[in-house]
Amino acid sequence: MPKNNHFNSSLKALNDYIDEEFKKSLKDLPPPLKPKMKYLYQGKRVRTKLIYNSAKIINCPIKEIFLSAFAVELIHTISLLHDDVIDDDFKRRGADTINSIFDNKTAIFLGNYLIQNLFYLLAKHQETLKKEILLNKLNEICRGELMQNSYFKTKKKINKQDILGIAKKKTGALFSLSAILPCLSRKMDSELIKMFEECGYAFGVSYQLLDDFKDILKDFKKNQNIGSNLNYPIQLIEGKGAKITKSSSKELKKKILEEILLKIKTIALNLKKKIHTSSYSQEIKKFHQYFEQEMDALGQRILKLN
Image (cartoon, rainbow, N blue to C red; front, side, top):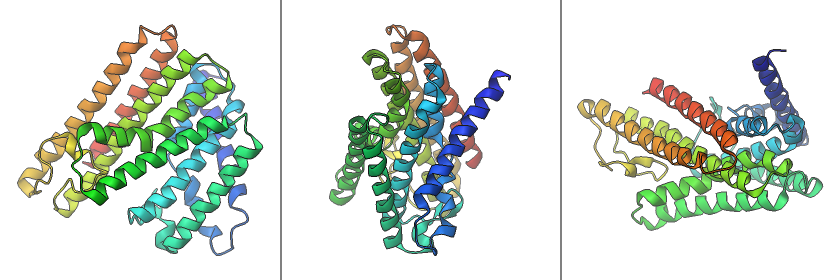
């Protein structure tokens, strides 16, 4: 079988496994909820793809990461259910969110129900899922969300480092976990794990910045002031609170995106500098190439929305 076909076939098998595990997790829900559950596990699976590529780079058998990939997607889905309530979002993955179809209580209860499923997995598969590390990353995600919320509540001025720090915790933590799980499964040494963890954090922060730009585009469509939402990386550039007009819209959007892409390029360059200092330079180089390809593809998709 050609190499690319084998890659696609293995990735499909991994995604099929995750689909089946989600169905099992949701099978005992009350009947009125079940028809609306499919959207929960029909995302882009960026983190699954990251786990898969990390495994591929270090020659970790794909079956070893099946359970880990499901656990990561479960955590991600729980966070989305709660985020949709917090952010008053009514669309997710092109479909109506649970809180818009039912109500906020249902979304919160469903998120809690899936947390119970996660704890069950951790109790049953402690060694496979590296329980302590996974829970530490989950704690980091929660701290990132609390940090962001504290800025909303206190209206404290936020600087560039704070924005990147929040993105590293609330998004980067799960990306870093995805990057290292295959390494932990193979019992690789601490140097490689540390380097893959750094790559995962860089990937997550970059992904968050580009994803936030899509939210900024919503403000442009509404012709309202931008930068009031701390989800936005608007503070990375000059012009926070700038009034959007027809004449300024195109130029301002271009400037914001250029600044974000420049920041991501800097992150990528900082990673590249570490490649030659590591005894695992070949593995890190492959990860870095994958990271750049994904960021370029995401940037191109966002440009089409522009």
